[in-house]
Image 1 (tube, rainbow, N blue to C red):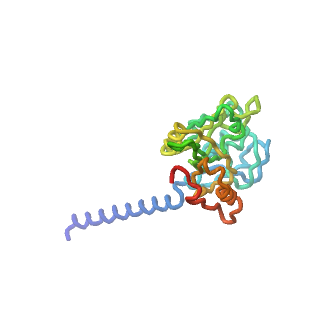
Image 2 (image 1 turned 135 degrees about the horizontal axis):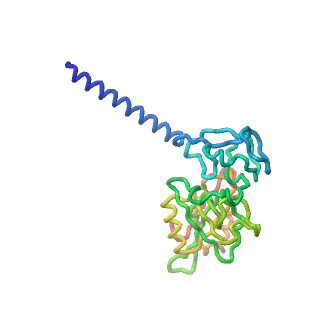
Image 3 (image 1 turned 45 degrees about the vertical axis):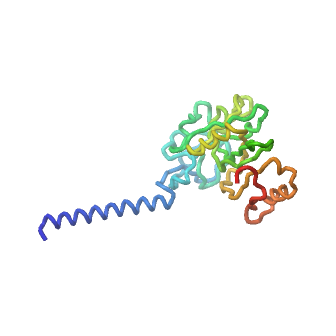
Length: 266
C-alpha cells in the first residue's frame, strides 16, 4: 500500500470518528433535554422584601428543555442584584423574574421574554369578563374554545391547549400590580407563549367562537389525556354530568370520558 492510500485511509477514519463523536454528543444532549443553560438559584430560603446579594445566589445547570422563560439566567445576575423579593423562594429553587419586586424601569420588554421558536399571542377577554385581572405573568393556563356545531343550535367546548405560559397581562410583564391594584387593568388581554402551529389553532378557534382560559396551579404541569369535547346538548344528560364529576374522584388520574361525551368532533 502506498503512502497516499494510507494517508487517505487515516483521514477517512479520523473523519468517521469525529462524525460519530459529534452524533453521540448531539444524541446525548437531545436525550437529556438539550444544551445546558445556567440559571440562578437561591442558596437558602428567600423571604419577601429581602434584597438580593451575591452570597444569596448560586448557579445551576439545567437542560434547555426544562428552562422556563421566567427563570433568571446567570448572565442576568447583575440586573437582579439589589432587587427585593416579592414572593418567597425555597432553597435550591430557581429564581424567576416573577419572584422579584420590579420597578417600572426594571420591567422587561415582552419580546425579550419569548423563548426562541415560540411566539407571543394575544387573547382578549370578553367585555363582561374581569377574571383575567386575577391572572399574573408567569402563571400557566389551559385554553378552552367554545364553538358552534354546524347545522344545530348547540355549541361544543374543546380543550384547545394545555399548560400554556402567560407572558403578560395587559401591559404588565411582571406580577406587580399597577396603581389601580389590578394587573393590566388598561386592557383585559393575555399574551401567551405558543408555538406557531398552536398560534394558528388558536386563531382559527378565535375566529369561530369564544376563547376562555382556566388557571392552573404553578406546580401542576402535567397534561391530561383523554379530555373529550363536550356538547351543550349534554348539559341535561345526568350520566354525562356524573362522568365529568368522576374526574375529581379518580385516584390514579382523570377518567377518560370516551365517545359517550362526544359532541361535534370525534
